[in-house]
Image (cartoon, rainbow, N blue to C red; front, side, top):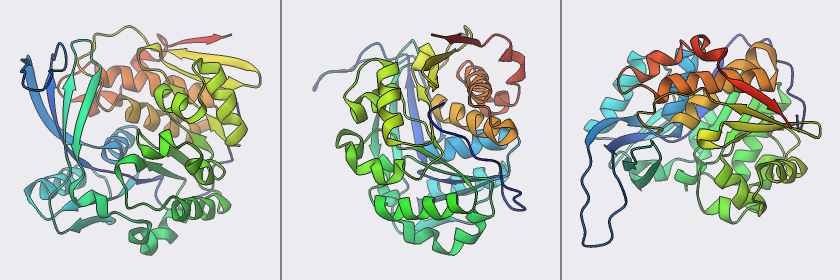
Length: 325
């Protein structure tokens, strides 16, 4: 791969700490096309659920057997109460889930018939989330097996230099450090993220993000360019085409089994949870990608009990294809 995956520490604490965003997702399904201003299109259905990269990753990780803590911010309103209650009921640690004055973040997702989606998001109280909110939890983070920072594009209060310092201190203690920025201004400006890329063990952008970060179009070229800037393992997710990484000079593609897609909202976060789970088990990036791919395939094929389906990833493991190019 681009870089070595470190040995898993003998952590007596939590398996995974997730630092990220949480919100309420309203998904409008079966949207054939986006309307122009003044126009209207009809959806075929809708659903509302707890979302955000931080919440999605934490919920998936629990269903993969990882003890998990989530650091995030909600508002002091009914949606914030709902998020807290749901996370705690699912066994996710919410000791670092801060309640701030204001409204909880909310997103409307337009989901095409093929499962692709687009979002409109109100950040609400989550815009106030800062690295300072994590200071009293840092010792617990340092005793965990893995620390994932995700969705910084939706956390404008997170100072990237301070986040890099937090990750570097964790990495020094032997914690597996993971980063998935999501789409945002720091992606299109590229180099602002390098201070974080230097201190992470696993980078998990999607292909659009990788292209924006590198200026490259082809997946192999984006992996090589990111590998020059990130000493850890780089894995790029490519939507329905699966995911890719480098094993030395060899491009490795991991392809999803054929499933009927209900919707793909949160699929990348479920994949990330599978990758982290796999790396903590045996540190083999390709095997971890297979686990993440199978978990995500189960998840996207369900309209109900989506997270519960993640734990059955082994049912699809043999159908995941690995190609070395």
